Image (cartoon, rainbow over all chains, first blue to last red; front, side, top):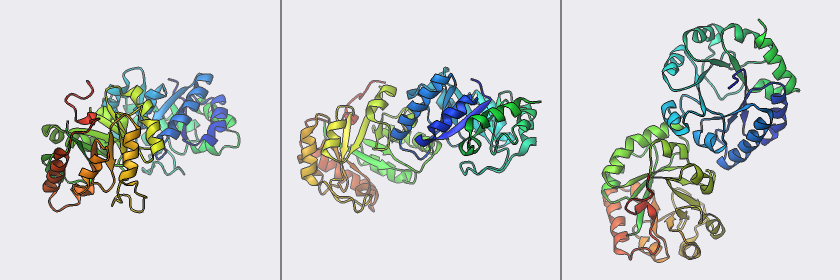
Length: 202
Length: 215
């Protein structure tokens, strides 16, 4: 899975044009986040995302729900600290799906190294407006420490946009995960391209 | 096979009450907690599963098919906001699947996909105040129209269980009739006795049958 740029998409069908534009701009993983949504809505929206991601040859990951990930034939499932334990999810999805795990401190990141997960998300690195993750800001220094100490790929999350993505690669993360930067951008394709360009610039 | 007795519990149900209800003759414990995270639900399910199995009863998980699979529950109960039973079946062919219906039309639509239906509310209930009750006539119309077992929910208790079974229900689903009582074990036992004294249902609830679905 190409972990460079994740777009975390709430289950809102009106966002589909933005998702498509962002994928054209280089988003490599679309993550469906449906907490609080009706499962039937999630399933329908997820099917549209699967279609879109298949057409563009990018990955689909489902947040929190291994059952939906399997039903949608997603490429992965992303877990938070209060979701099902990674070992149980691995048993449910087998080895063909990738598992990501959100972490918010060095201790959580180190614990995740022992879990059967393929990559870690770490953050929030910068202040963020989305209220979904109320954890304290970790900053770039802790991100760098985590990236150095863990033996799995680290994706940075929290307040990332084209304005700061150049700092992420330097800190050792292989990719970034964004919500607001792409949802709010007047031109999500351009914003995705800009995030990636600055992320890969040394 | 006598009529079945399902009890809905959540994270806050004291273990001593669950134990008392199990000793009184509950067949199926449905763990339902909409506000719980998957981890909370998983941990609670793992905590109560041994006592449920020790009593020869079965654990069902409400809504979350993944949690039901993870804890090796016997079944999942799917509500109107959950995965449709036909979709859930593809993923979990080994689980018994129940689903909630509230009208005859819904019952006819879903009967072919579920192992059992719950229909209600039959009587006015504490957990859904203000919701219209379908009454015994509504229950009996649904039970007559579908080929899968129908369980009655909503205001069902030992006082009306015999009438509910006579209307065609294969069992009952209760919360407060057992848990909101001073003596949970006695309330459960009383309901169990009423169910056992009634003629066995024509279409028994598969959740009570010997092996159930082989897993």
